[in-house]
Image (cartoon, rainbow, N blue to C red):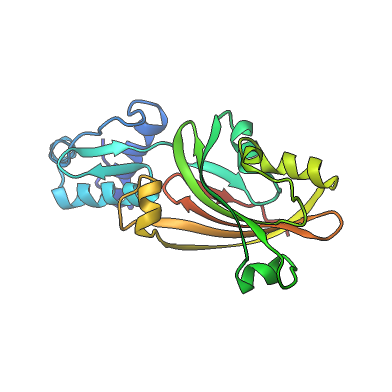
Length: 240
């Protein structure tokens, strides 16, 4: 099955072999792949070569290891484009997945200086501080920490976060959502967040800070999101 005369390294050929069977459904989500010893015997190569192939696929998010049990096929990553402004709920529905969330906290408080400046608040203005876990098909995907000016939607309550907050804000403010700015960075997950996202540490996450605006130019939210890097990826189209 391997071409040892090829210029393509053996470990890459083994990766492609495993990828092909994952894509074709021969190895389904959650299923264990053959052990390192079985793959070593199958291909007639060293265990180190097989281990390198598996490690690369683990790093790509296609496989995951469980100590003492073996290596398993991961769930496919959810893709989100960076070209449009949509809510998590809208994204998941568009992909045929069932969105849900768990509200961890809902508080009215004075914001930090950074949040106050970002939302163009004056001294004494309060924000609603909301923390929740976002799920897709009952799988935890992200933790969202959202800050909304109280003076913009004083009637805001916990029920608004049972579905799409963007639909609620457009109805309540009688303004359309215009645009947003966001920045992204990769970091190691914090222990508290790892427990909520059912991750093992150390593990990478994507931190995204989004500030969204209404058509009248006012910012209506700042969202600090922690996304599972093994379950989520962002895609952008770049034109010349």
